[in-house]
Amino acid sequence: MIRADIAALIAAGHSDEHIARRLGCHRATVNRHRNRLRHPATPDERLLAEQLPTPVRDYDRRRQPISPAQAAANRRALANALRPTTAERRAA
Image (cartoon, rainbow, N blue to C red; front, side, top):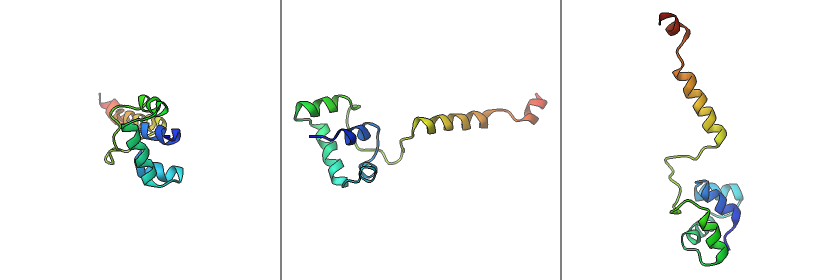
């Protein structure tokens, strides 16, 4: 049986190592669940696998998943950086 908490974190794009640290289990446990999601055997596993983006693959370490709050903060910082300064507005 696949643990739903592990499946949810896999779906969110977290690495095996991050999930293991977060849930307090071994990385091999997370890897085993990830592999079972690739090849579901029971009806419960099939239901969990259907909720995941396809294909189920390991996390890309070059791109860290960010929370919606962090994404919003990044958008605000970018908008502020692109906003013209007072001197630029006066010159225009």
